[in-house]
Image (cartoon, helix red, strand yellow):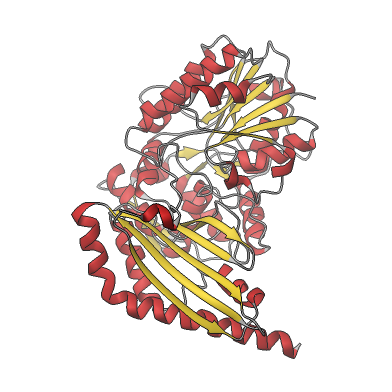
Length: 492
């Protein structure tokens, strides 16, 4: 049994790797900026948690203390525009801590890339790999292209482009080759890297059995999803920047993430050799081909079994500030919209409705207005409403929900959502339930906004006329839906 530290454990890959390593008998330690964010993950009680981030030297040393293997699975792409310098700083911090605590092995997940000039994203990934490899600690770098699985950024980008557009104007890079890998195969290589002898190090390409053009990737997805194949028109006038704007508008991927992703699609990204097979045997059942990986991802979504999504992680450079408690508002400018309603529904029924908001269900009031606000957010580079939900039925702390993130969740009592849309300030939506004496529930709905400067104040007052319609309708229809649900239960 090894002691293993995992950075990026709240991310798409890290959140799936941790339970596999636990099942193999390893002792796991993870790092997160807020330990409470891991409360609802199934493996929380089985791991040790270090609170902090990778720019914190003290936390990095605590993470590395007594560790045999450290997995480096973080990136700040999608955060600030200076993500390259942020990634370098984080890598140097972890190297210093790992050397000081005598960590025996580093495992790093990087990206497939050709030789020559690379995008900023891939250049940064390669540079981080070099920092880790030059540490003197045996380092294994696994280089993967598109990772295909339910909730992965690559899968979601392909899914939404293909679902939405019957005719797809596309740049010339749709003819470039890529070698996707199923997420379970990527996890196979990652999990087995922990048990390699110390003299095994270096960079190894990993990928599925075949390479495809991006155009073929979308056509095969359409076949697997039983959709009509899109007509793909290769247009040389679409620059990477314009392509990223298109991806931002049509898919859940925000502009800050779409731009570096699209920049990385300008070259063929295929496996150059099979040297990985010399140190880690492929899965017994063989590598999963692209079509099968799409079918598996769609099945996971259909069965409500999506464990993690690309939006689960928060970029290293983004803040994660919680709503201050009411006494902390003293002396600060804050705007609120506070509404309450009485309901005959039980707290459990009312909270079932509350927990189901967003995604395909919507917000029980003026869906066209919500959609317009989501489009406006997309236009300025925000996440918009297309991000949806990880699960259509349940929520967990830290879950993305459209342009919100679940900040607080107390079953049958409280749901607090922190806004991640582009606004001149900080915003929350809080929905709470209290039981009434004699039966029924008291419903409270509160929108809270801390403005930033004059722009924040003008923003609040510009949307104030809509609040009376949107929020009053939302409160009325949520309680009404809960009462209907209660009646359905009593009739069964």
